[in-house]
Image (cartoon, rainbow over all chains, first blue to last red; front, top):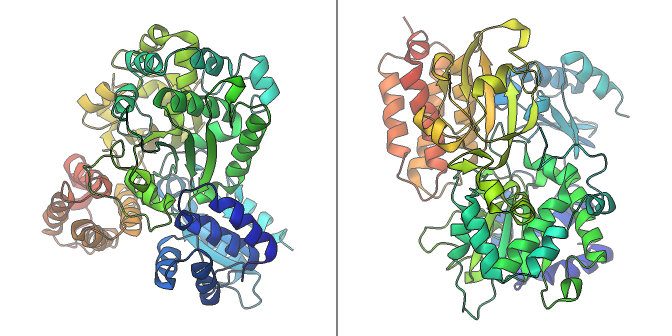
Length: 154
Length: 414
């Protein structure tokens, strides 16, 4: 369930659009920020609030790669391996991240601290290779810098 | 050279600093004029869209119905997700008010009272920067009801995407905004007739709109004569890959690609003093150009078209002599396969088939007939899909085979 603050915020967001259906992506963002992921119960709750079919909400959640229907690590690490990052050594960056976290891309560490995702271009090609941890971008990396960065995550 | 999209003024992102350098004066001048006159000025300026298609902005605006009682909408496309493209992010960070001012002038010109800025979900940090600028502009009544004491009212909202390249396609963007999966719509009808919620809608790229205040302030004559004749104006070029100084650079259209790569003002030469092998001039979907084919080619629509590629988003990807082009094309194809929305069979299946064939080349396991098979699949995607993602997936493969066939032949299993 969305908490009271988020339900109130969703009410405000709905007013931006002529139809409440348009508030679905914003609602899913609120849910994910609140819970870290979007559970099936949450999808049903949002479907109810916005008068949508649950199947529609599920379809939207699974279409967009940034919505997660399972919990991610405390630090969700996204490694770009697309063209500009590839040219500047992103394979080694992905190796460093996997090695440090002790998991492979697509996995969540057992203690829940890390999850790794290989992602498409994040729009930081001038600072390639790059990773993102949560919303923060870290650019112009090499394996040493990556290792230092990850070692500082508490 | 003076900069017009990314002026080198400290704290230009702050509304007070923006105002102290003449910011929002274009809005004041615009709302003293007739809306039709603004559209005419933008038309005469020859401003062309900066999102990839290079369509004439003023002409696009004239497609909006004038006497329709239906509500009209404006969408600003900030989904920038084409690999090699990272320019709009700089506008959100360093010049958000020029984007806002451009939106307001556009809305005034087309009689629109609601604008949405669709920004990719990964740009959470930049969404907050843009929201701060919007809030500050509301506080000074540049946005909202009865703007600056006139009858003109407009609201601006940010809509956050959630990681789908396809939502940069304008009709997929509208579906996403309406709370749907990002499926492109069949055109016609075009957005100006049947856009958001079935109403007239215009969609422009962020950078395109940031040019609008310049046209009002400096006049269409200035704009039309700045840079390349048929594709004028300032433009943001993103240079990435094997150059010494990658980054976003503002130029006047028409600068030579070799200058962008080697000049100290721009890329400052190839990393490690290596030789150039090839460039992809306008984001990953544009056709690759071998090093010996870029002499005298410049960053504008006509020159790149003549050279056998296109300007796209002006995301110049530079590759040195050591680059494994098979690895590059495999990764790019994997991207288009991942991002295909799945509506059209040629794109959904074809991008996957191309990726599988390319994986064989990458592992040196390809058969001799795989080159023509790959080309055949690409040719059967191109032109056979609802939107241009299919073409965007086919062009890099077709051009790579045409211009670097030897790289494929070298990977055939002996």
